[in-house]
Amino acid sequence: DTGLAQVVRTEDAAELSATGPVSGPGAAGHKSAPLDFQRRGLYFLRTAFQHDRPQGLLEASVTCFRRAGATDLEAQARAELEAVRAVDLLKASAEKTAVKVRGRGPGGPGGGPSHAVRRS
Image (cartoon, rainbow, N blue to C red; front, side, top):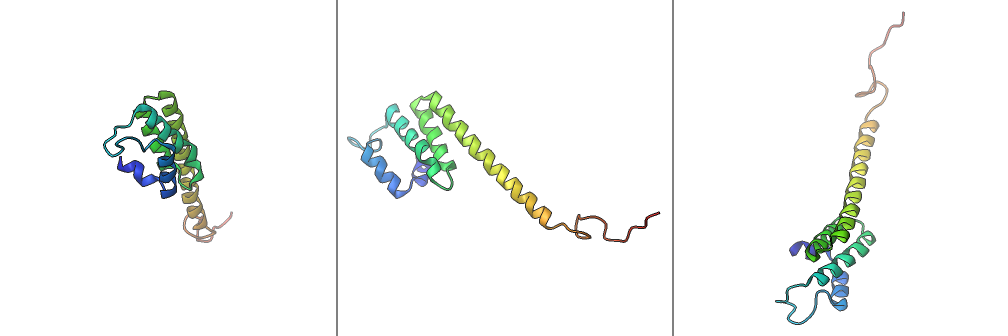
């Protein structure tokens, strides 16, 4: 999976190789066992929040758990992923709102009438 390789830093890949999930007899042609995928998924899930953008690692963990057949862990990783996505959406919405509010002012765009109002 190229998606998995793209989200792993060099240090993380070295740790994975040292712990065994990626290495093994004939690693290049070796097909990963469900336990290997579960180990990788646990690693990605455990380290996701050590990064500025955990979404990629959480997506990788969901994929690994699905391939391992670990539905309970997949559900946990998917819940974490959806929570991160929700927070990202809230942050983006807040930033968008802040930009709109900064652009408004008395008599400015959207800030009320720019002409004098007569009172009776």
